[in-house]
Length: 121
Length: 113
Image 1 (cartoon, chains in turn blue, yellow):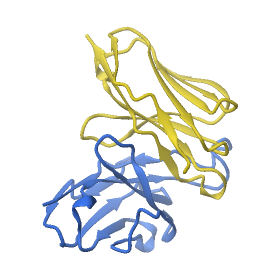
Image 2: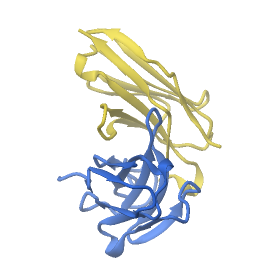
Image 3: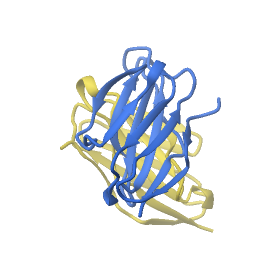
Image 4: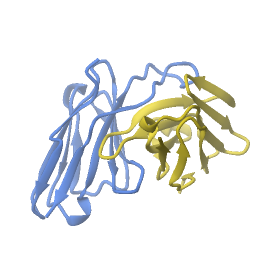
């Protein structure tokens, strides 16, 4: 079990530039999530994929943000025209769902990667 | 706005003591709850999850859930300095969004040798 892998670990960029982050989930996990965490806060949900389908996007995800998960494997999160307020830790998580509830064992907990810390100059 | 509230801390306990972390939630339809531990600069690490009323024990950790009171807690027995971290409480959203986690702001725990 290699865990959830995120790259890069750190990204420093100037305001207005575009950035792209990558997430490789645990291999058998069909669900993938992106969260954003700022200092002193818990992670906030951004978006979610079931296999290759993006099934929900938070209102936090402005038009400058786009996420993809081609072929249901790795995922990328792109931020265009970065702003100071985009500075945060971007966390990716994955889980396995075979249908049903947690109680029935059909929906497993989410496991997080080490995150990408984005700093906007 | 569905929320998860945690006692803000920081919480400081001596080594060997019991640390008690508490969490309340507003989404009455939330089914499952999770405790994550997060060391400074690191990602959240799953400690425990619970979805039935009552207690769930795993080693030194006990999670408690009371759905009527909308209350979740985590007890850490025989606290060790290595337990010093921020503890995040999270609950799933109700209905068709049960994959989505809502996190509290976290409670910083310090275990003093």
